[in-house]
Amino acid sequence: AGWVAGLSGQDHQYSQFFNAPVYLNPALNDQFDGDLRANLVYRNQWTTLPGSPRYFTASVDYNIPQFGGGIGLMFTRGTEGSAYLVKNNISGIYSYSVGADNFVLSFGLQAGLTNRTINWNYLVFSDQIDPRLGFDPALATNAEIPPYNNRFYFDTGAGVNLVWGDFMIGGAVQHINRPNESFTGVKATLPMRIAAHASYRWDLNRYENLDEDEKSFLIPSVVLYKQATAQSVSAGLQFKRRGVNAGLWYRSGGENGPGAVVVSLIFDLFINKEGGEKLRFGISHDAPMSKLSYSNTSGTTEGSIGYETTLPNRAAPYRKFQDTRRCYDFY
Image 1 (spheres, rainbow, N blue to C red):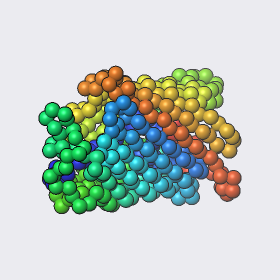
Image 2: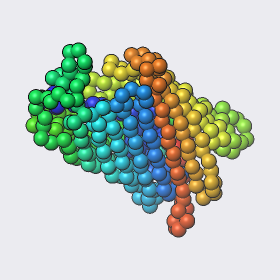
Image 3: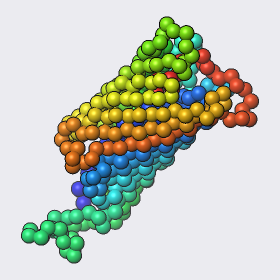
Image 4: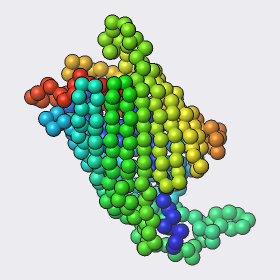
């Protein structure tokens, strides 16, 4: 049953990383202009391939201005392959920020529990394949099936983020404790996932007497991922004006995956501007550029929704570093 220990893959990546900020970096927890924020993002990858991967992340974070930080909760679910390899994770997050008039430095800690399951009944073994007819479900297999099909383990992560003027840079490490994912006695360590990201906010109306909401911005960004031998780079540009954000990206696939061109479109709907109440809708589509053809996969689609609000019974309107550029200004 040694083959079972190898049923391990790399963590998924969202093309709309800016709409899953807590998944990208726990230091981005509580980094928003309000009291309470909720984010949902769903990724349907290579939609026409059998057993195509599907991922979902939901997060809620809450500002605690008296402590200069916040707390958060994140749930992530992934379903991969025709054998329905399912991974569920729930994590708590704590973040804290320090800063001054021209910079904010944030730190985040993450800890949670992951459950990993697989349905052995959907696996196909070599002795179930007829040389002439192909797979025959009536054929019994002599392969040794492990007695367990689920695994629980503790998981941890940490991150840091710096906003200095119109520049932002950050990094995060997940699976710091390198948990064992194996369904058997053969150890299968989950490798650490490292993410680094940087963005620049270019004000196209810098010398014009306009409110921030009336200005136009170009925001180039780059995100680097590395997990074991797998690595990729996502680089692109967003144009942001009056609650509309359009982006064009290229993501390299590294040695093991296909590269892709990504188009994204984000809409911010301000329900109550003075109360900080905002809805965000996002859609993006990936078109593979190598190793996989678009005609065979139909690409990858992501949808997201976010909600921010200021609670009516919140006592103190003052927020730490409220006049300093924050990470939410970059997406």
